[in-house]
Image (cartoon, rainbow, N blue to C red; front, top):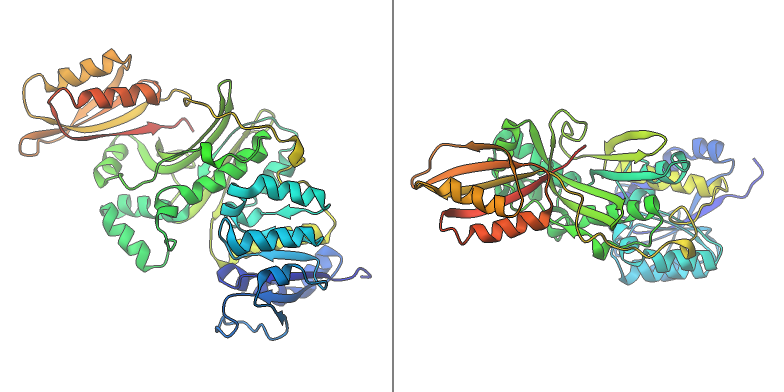
Length: 429
């Protein structure tokens, strides 16, 4: 082994940063054998130098400022594990690229918001940005898209990309608990971000989907064009009634190129209970990739946590150590097309739940409203009465969301709606 060591500078010593330190310490000989050169940590940076992290940082140089760390002459790769779309993470990443360092990051927000400009800066300086750890934790979905499926025209990308939301939904179903009860439990266990909306509002998962869509379809990152809807309105009644019909509810991300433009959606959907996505339990993630040659492949695994995410970080480090270099999003940033957002999603069946005033003709009025919007009913189920109202659910034939929304708006004028209707798309998986 004659090659010089690959020298790392790590900014951010939280869960993932500490996990990365542990892998480098524990597997030094194995990493060197696989990379053909030693992997070494030169320097680190974090907000608190004296915090007990359960692993020693004494062997490494310390920098209070991550930008100073990024500019050090004695490192080859800047590993950004701080998080945040802008601020120190972005400034340090830009500094590293400008100083001729490659970058490995787990920062989905930074890339979803600033990915195009950072990719262009990397190319201007002959550097690479690797970000396997930013999407689906330990699942190697970035490598699957950029390498394993490089011979395919990708037709659709979808998946469950936020373990916290999947934990909440599956625990609601398995234990018959309300959303608020499971939300509080998840918060106490430390599953939620400091701003829980990032998780339950679909923003975290939306960042990941935007990055996958860019790679899959060769477009500039367009997170701002994504349809985002969280799981806050999902009730135990929705989950139980979906189960009665053979479905489960998932926060599902879908990206596909259509004749109308790029469709990107992160929203609760019903999926067949017997499908791989329907069988996904707990905090596990799953991505489903479809290509014209390969058909459908399913990748399942831990979407977060110290070990899985640090594993993904080190996979990127190892590629750089071996000399494997590809553009940030699988093709030159200058060649990425402007994203044209699809104004409407591909039609699909919908689940509609509402409570009707218990009076003659109420159901007929709702059916009339749906018919006026060209929406036909596939099946209908009425549940037990509750005082003066009757819970009713419909499954429609394929329609578009605009027709659904127009129907819901007109239902309010019928005088028979006892509670706000809920509409959830049924996805073909």
